[in-house]
Length: 175
Image 1 (tube, rainbow, N blue to C red):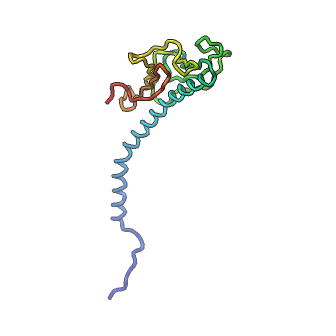
Image 2: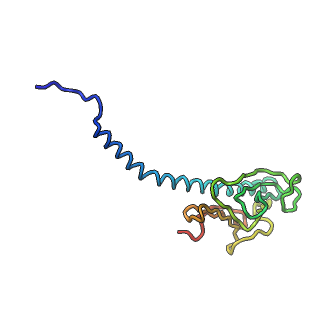
């Protein structure tokens, strides 16, 4: 009878088999992980504008006068950032030194664009849209968030209806 001999380590074959399994699992997981990160970044950036619009609407109701959100660039290119401001003088447009700047959002990171036909959005003290914004056929103001040359899977639309309700949706026309 031979004495029992204990094994003190792992063999090279066991190590290679384990590394092969880890490599196969990593090859499957990494592309899905990258896509998940891109989708989360797109959702977070689109949500930043929706949050700013909700904040402006809430402040209009709380303060009892118009509150606006306007693009930082002064045109309909919202991906350069925006400001939320209270319309103290009631003229419906942002005037530095007169109106109170409540929040400022800086430029998006990456190659995202955020477009809308308006340079500003105003909310009345009732929380509804004020002024005469450019709207679609459904009477909604729509911001179009796009990434990577209109990649359908990452595009988002931010809708604001006449009563001021704000919601995110997937890019129009995408499956």
